Image 1 (cartoon, rainbow, N blue to C red):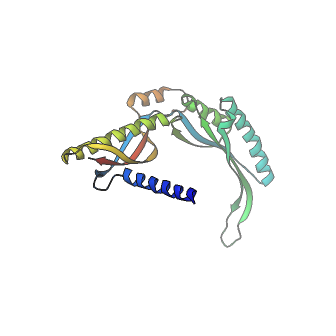
Image 2: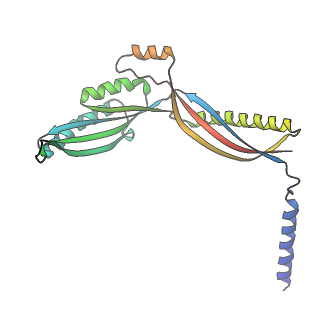
Image 3: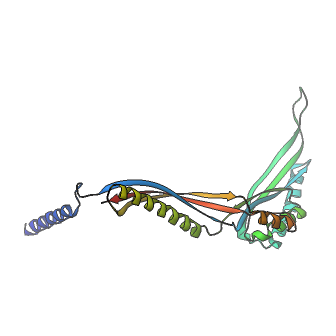
Length: 235
């Protein structure tokens, strides 16, 4: 019984301390909610492209065999271009019939079309044009892209985040000054970000791209955006 009484008294004491430590609603300052965004840009250094081979034959097996032979050459060319195996991934293989249509007649299969496509990540952007030309010369008859991205986006995001935070704090200071108060603390922060948004190149960059050998590629800039929702306490 003594143990139970002591435990109960200790629990009541803890509750009393916790309640006493809480600030009352009257003691709390005014809360102001502010949304702000920040952005930062950087020239992208990674390109994502897709390349593939389309072959046709009267027989489905022949179409697939011819496609496999040509695709093997393409994969070797990709490796010769200095692209690591981890940056090459098969993204689609398909075989479909080719039909001949005539009025009032059932469609007739006249052959087969085989597709094989790989997704490629090119980490040396300055060699992207040369790589595209090499793939086309090897037999790639289907090329899509590029999609450009920043390899290490976190430093760029940090810059955008700081910009958004500075904007939000400046607005909070404006509200506090107008109310004859001051900013005490940040109560909560919620963050959301957006992906890269391409920006046009400068004229000098475009001229350099046109003068380069092979397929010209204009990297431009990629802009990352951070949106913050903050709650400040004023006192």
